[in-house]
Length: 296
Image (cartoon, rainbow, N blue to C red; front, side, top):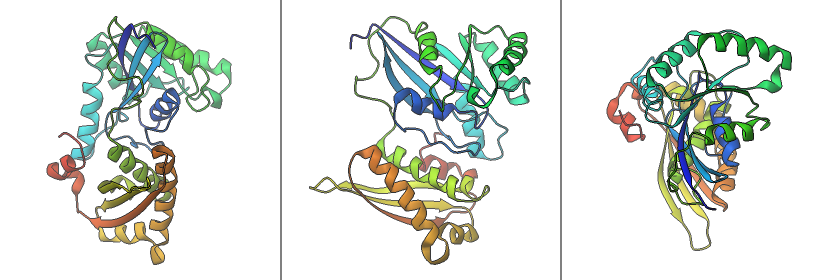
């Protein structure tokens, strides 16, 4: 493909608005974890797609929220840093005719940076079309967006039109990444995030947000099978028991769900072994946060 332009586009919004679903839909493969729980994404995730003569690099950021730990502070800082020095911003909201405090704070940040902004109203598959007019009216009164587009990241409705819009802001230049590259995330990080997604899905609200996942072994056999050793960290001994479950049933379930997704991502069989360890208050421990790949 003859790439003549390259652009960096940041996707911002409150937690659970659909940013990671959009990223996965854009690249056509699962590179960002998705759950119905807020603050699923902890780090910046880069998705790369060639669209026409432009290479678009989408930055999926953690949901903007009030931080309650050092990790939370880091997540909010990631958002603030990624609305600067980019070619365009996709400001994603739900189809609700009301601007919440989180959206107000994000808009305040965006106004200071003076970057082209596309208002992206997600989840249009959940409302009637006439209801969108009120949403557009409320947000248009607050900020003069360069474009406004309703989409469904889940069904893909409107996503191609969104890509057409942001491609306009890609400046002339060579491709930033090779043609066959869809993300800058290391395979170990994607695997760890897939396992953390299953923790979020399978466990009660408080426990999974206190977990972190580390891939301690990644090796490939001659027959192509990949051996993975993974450690799940939690903050309390009682949480460890819940993650493991009765006779190991919960940990087995999490491992089976994760292995299926990892095998789909890697395109080969995977032998996965998991352990659970307690690290109290790790979310407020800067050295541990750095060990898990967060630059604090």
